Structures are given as C-alpha cells and as structure tokens.
Length: 167
Image (cartoon, rainbow, N blue to C red; front, side, top):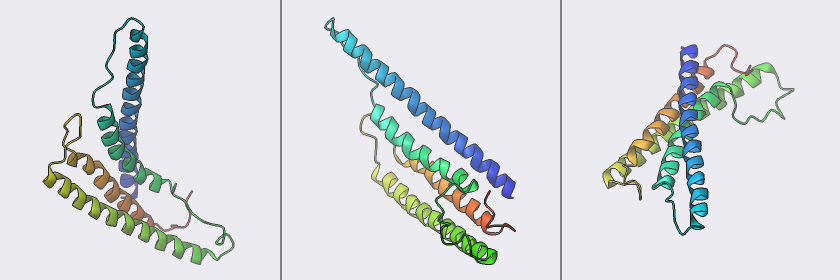
C-alpha cells in the first residue's frame, strides 16, 4: 500500500510540475509578446498580449501547487524541529513522530473538507474567471485530491514500522 501511495504521489507531483511548466511557457510567451509590442511601437503598431493571462496563471497555480504536497510528505520534506529531540529516547521520537503525522493527516483532511465547501459555494455562485469566463469550481478538484492524498500518505507513515526514521 505504501509503495502504491508513493508512486501515486510522485505521479501527481509530476502532473503538478507539468502544470507549472505550462505556466512558465505561457508567461514566456506573454513576455515575448510584450517585448514585441514595445518593438512594434517604434512603427506605430501594437501587438496584443495573451488575453486572460492572469486568469490562467491564477487558476493554474491554485491547482498545481497543492499537487506537490503529497510527494513532499512522502519525502518528509515538511519542516521538522529536531533541536530538542536529538538526545531524546528513540521511543519518544517514534511516538512524537506518529502523533505529528496523525495531526498532519487530520489537518490535511480538515483543509480538504473546507475546500469541498468552498468549491460547492463557488459552483453555486456560478463564479467565472474575469477575462476567460472559465468556471472556477473545477480548479478546486486538484487541491481537494491533493489534500486527501497527502492525508493518506501521512496516515500510511503513521503505521510504518520505523515511523521515526525519515530518510
């Protein structure tokens, strides 16, 4: 089960990375069009930037960034404070690690719950992006899935035999 969750989290992060890469490509194109517009201005012409650029970037970032969280949890890449626990007994470290993993899973599920409510409200309101006119509620789905996957990874780590060994 753990290996399957790790593969799923890695694939999900790669998909999130591809969305981030698309943001970079669109941003580069928009910057290129801006430069071209400046150049065309010398001849009294203009070149339009990408319409809806800000809409796309806002919605894509909101979808992509949470997609990296489950893989971060797989790698135990979240902030950990070991300053006081370096010399603590291994049993205490394992217990605290399991408690913190359980709290992390609980926090991720709590956020997922509120995102579901936010998505439902956004859908009921018929919220559209300002320029492109895209429905906004579908962009909640990757975030909700990411939070649930993050919680699943953290819960799987709670039940690992060597939960305190993160590396």
